[in-house]
Image 1 (cartoon, rainbow, N blue to C red):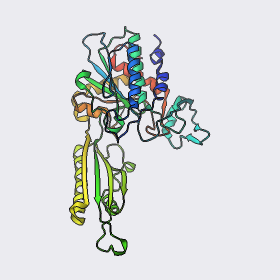
Image 2 (cartoon, one colour):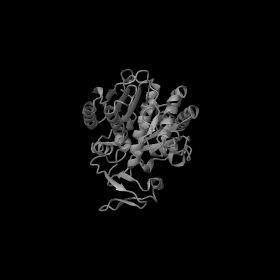
Image 3 (cartoon, rainbow, N blue to C red):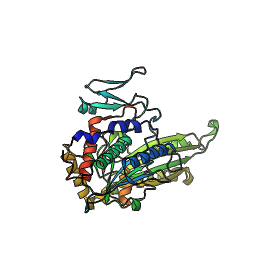
Image 4 (cartoon, rainbow, N blue to C red):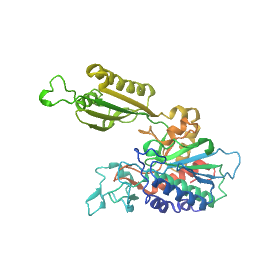
Length: 413
């Protein structure tokens, strides 16, 4: 059997999937947050049916489910999950993906606009010298997060249906909407999914294996001022925008994303708006350690209380909402699922890169919903921006790893 056969259609699928604009919208109150995600979901439903999968459906919320039935008894039921939506952080409409050979020199993405993907700016590119990369034209994101994961899962399923001699347990597949805005697991039907455990194929570059993520919360602070004509404002005006500036100045200046790494947490100011009368600050709060995470939320409350005492109780209103927790709490009791992924990577000639996620995935919430769910690499780099790219050999590697996970005795390199 030709090993390269397992990758048949992989690149073509990926290039087609990224042609769908599927950006999610945090301001929307619907599920999915954008109707355009339903279009890709409907296409995938039809493709999975043609491949020969069973129990294929797209539910009312836009989630796509499918099953590849077992052909060997006594094996665990393993889930494979990726998300349909792309980030709203950069333009996702009219994606013009192309394949280029990377010889180590800057890649001209868009000659007309003078846009270049330069290894001087992104030195991690040099690890992929001598490989073909899929890139954008520099005006949109690519969408490898997470259409690379979708393409890898579908290609794996297609290969297994074409090769029934490869023995495996039941494989459950799900494609979720709205992961990029933190809602990917909101309507996920874990009971219907019926997997012993699962993997999200949603990580970055080759080798990444993640089972620890941030504890996360959002914080919204509203400042209420008093606008008085500046000519007679002495001892009477309360400038809401200056209150907001004072609040932010009381947070530790070095505990922000641009000054932290690894397991270091942070406060991240994501939005600010204001005038003399009213102002708002929006933060995301992150920490891997649950105790430090709790202290961060307390610190925000304490600053708000201090300013209320200083300027009046109604001057500051704070709302903090928890978003997700560190999945390691749920993964630790079932570490064999991580060890299985490590072994699968080494079997494919890949050394696992185990690191905490400085963010969150569907897998974090799903793990607390009863579906332990580590995260595997999908192969892309520079997610959420115009300089996103994915090396084609990394796409191939992800398929090999998935095959080694679901059929560990059958798919040796």
